[in-house]
Image (cartoon, rainbow, N blue to C red):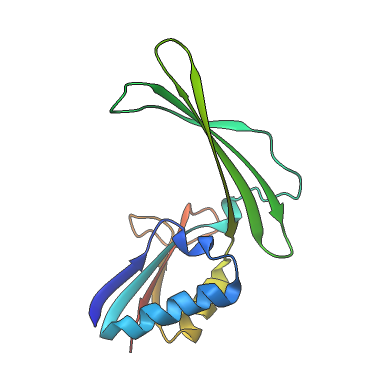
Length: 156
């Protein structure tokens, strides 16, 4: 049994069925000792622009590969299913070598948005007592404009 566990950076959202998200939280609960903490870090869904139309392909980030020195461009596009709270996301990485040749990697994925009351209910149904909900890594209060939704659950 552990005293601390976490599910960071929205990774719970990669489980796209509600029962799978609940099962993951329930499994985490069973692994904690009494008084143990479990932290779930999610993006605040109020910041999402989850539309049913596919968004234009946008340049999200420009980087350098530390090994090869190649320039890497990361593009992002998504389409939402609002009723199912699902986002079909496409990430495209273009690696450009010194000669200008491009190697493209396409990474499609699906994520399920979790809203504040739903997140709290999932944690409580899994057995946790939700001790706090923060809106940032600096532990600011959770508000509509917060970037993150960080729930801290305690195993009784």
